[in-house]
Every structure is written in structure tokens, then in C-alpha cells.
Image 1 (cartoon, rainbow, N blue to C red):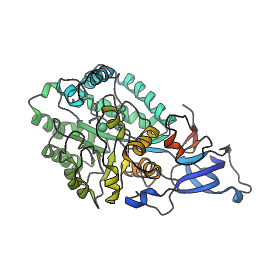
Image 2: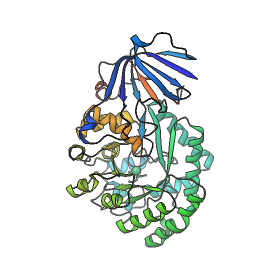
Image 3: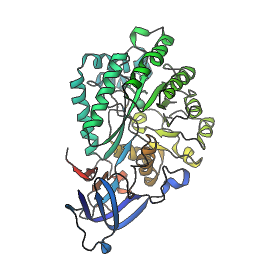
Image 4: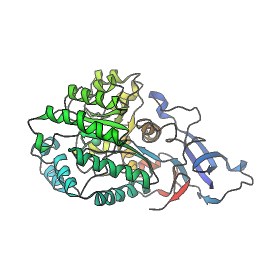
Length: 413
Ligand code: NIG
Ligand code: FE
């Protein structure tokens, strides 16, 4: 199938140098091409150029962008979008003054979602999750990482991961799966945290590996959840089974999660609301992507990660949604980009790069996704005609995305 898109006002996010992520000062540059066409062949970007060079081009389908801009799809490298039901009761608790930690200590939070998930059939869980997948696809996301972590028993963790596998097999987005058995200590193990860590390492991880159900292993390494030492043990066990770590770190406290993640070559350390100079230093030159989730900081009323300091230190930061029922009930990557600009003072170019190419890097997909590059998968969206690239994060609630293409085919929700 050859798809030709013509009359594109501007192609945004072109990458011709083959870079797998952008770091420091490179992040503020977005390569663009005005008044352009783009050809996709067999689901991949085959060529693009200026309208005046188009001539006669054979295609099975021609789409007129009518002057709108073409952006590479968002690459959302951190979500928990497989979950049962919702948690707006805690939303009210938070409005009435309880913190995320207090809700968790009272047995709410993640454990609430674990109870709900246990009672929900695999079929129903898939149906609920697919509704969220369709929502984010229509909002411009083309690659998504999805975590387990609301099972907290071997059986229920496997159930979640099977749902993620089914999404991967049926949705047109690229999907990566992460095993997050160490998301919280389940009720039946309270006071026996060490035994739960043993269960994660000796029973859950081998079962996940045997079923080839996860690409990555994650741990919530934070105050009140899992310690640095426990995190190291789980990362080691996961790595032996071929799962690279991606760590929840430094959301609630300066937890040591960043350093231990870097030490074990984690692909990313995520959250980073609590960062000191030592944490930023540890990330310099590391393979580990510092991934920020401003939707969670916004929803929980926390301070935001120090994006400017990280970029100044030369790091290549990524942005993700953290779509989950407790700390970020939204998978809207445009909103994430806007929050990054408004609250973390990232430039629109930095934020768009962080949500596309660097997001793809943070889930090991940047060879095939995250930019407009010949040979990459043809995942992109076309906007209404807009006056500038900056207009996208600026007009932050205006529905500007007009058409979505995944694997070179139009996606209709
Ligand atoms: O990334 N911080 C840990 N996990 C999720 C929240 C999960 C939940 O509250 O359900 C997060 O914020
Ligand atoms: Fe998360």
C-alpha cells in the first residue's frame, strides 16, 4: 500500500542523522520542511520532499493535508493503562486534604486497583484497556509502553500481561510490555515485604519470562514502597531473564532509585520529582533515560522535575503520561507536552523531542519510531492548519489533531 500525503504545511521532527536520542542543547532543535509531501510504502516512510519536487507520483491512496502540519506520533514510554474501573473516590480524598502517600498507607491506592483487577475478567479488562488505547491513538500516540503491577499475585500479574500481549496483537500502535510486580506490597504480605520480593524474583519473574510476556522489569523504588537494595535484587533477577530495567524513582523522596537504576543500566528512570545534584550527575553519560511524568505532578499537586537543570547538564530527557487511575488518569500526550512547557519551562521543541524520539528511546524503539525518517514506521498525525509549531502546546485544549496514521494507514477510532 502506497500512501501519499500532499500539501503538508510543515513536516516537523525530521531526523536524518540517525540519532537514537537527543541530548542537552540538541533537544531545542526540531528539523522541519515547509510545503511538503510524504510517501509511505508498506507501512514505512519511503520518501518526503518539497511540493515543487512532487511531479507524478504513483500511489494507492492520496491524502490532502490541506496545509496542516505533520508530526511524528507521540511515543508514550510509561503507562499503566491496563486497570479495572477507576479511583475517583481517592480524587475526593485528595481534594479533602489527604496525600497520595496517606491514601496508600490506609490501604487505598494501588491496593484498591489490585482488588478491582482481581474481580475483573480478562475479557473485561481487555475491553476497558482497549477503550483507553483507542483514546490515546486518536490523541496522537503511536507507541506505548504498558506495565503490569495491579495484580500483585503471580496469577493476576500474568493475567495483566496477557491482556497487554493481546493489545499488542490487536492494536495498530507499537506496544512494549513491562512487568511491575514490585509496584506495592499486597495486603497478604504486609509486614513480610522481604518474602514478597522473594516471590517476585523466584516465582513471578520466571513465570513472566517463560511466557515471554514482558520486555522490561520495573520496581517502585521509593519511600514506603521498595528499597534500593530490593530494587537491585529484582533488577538483577530480571536482567538474567532478558528483561532490561525501567525504574520508578524519586517521586516521593530522594530514594537512591536514580543511582541504582544507572548502576544496573536501566533503560529509564521515571518520575524524578525529587532530584538533587548527585542524581543529575549520575545520569550524565549513562544509557539511562531520565523520564518525566508531569501529568502525575499536576494531578497530585507535587513539585515538577527540574527539567531545565537536567537539559543544562546535557541529559536527553523524555516525557511520558504515566496514564493510571491513581496519579494520572490521562494519557493525553499533548497535555503532557503543554505541561512540560508551562510548568517545567521546556521549549516546545524540547518538549516535542522528549515526547517523540526520546520517548521512543526510553522504550527501546527509537530505531523504528519517534521521528520522520525514511525507513521508520509511518506513524504520524496531521493537524489543522496552525500558525506555528509552538501553537500546538500553546492552544492546549483545542482539538488540533485532524487525522492520525499508524503503519501508513489512516486510524479511525
Ligand atoms: O507511576 N508511582 C507509582 N505508580 C503509579 C501510580 C499507580 C497508582 O496510584 O495506581 C505512578 O504514579
Ligand atoms: Fe508509573
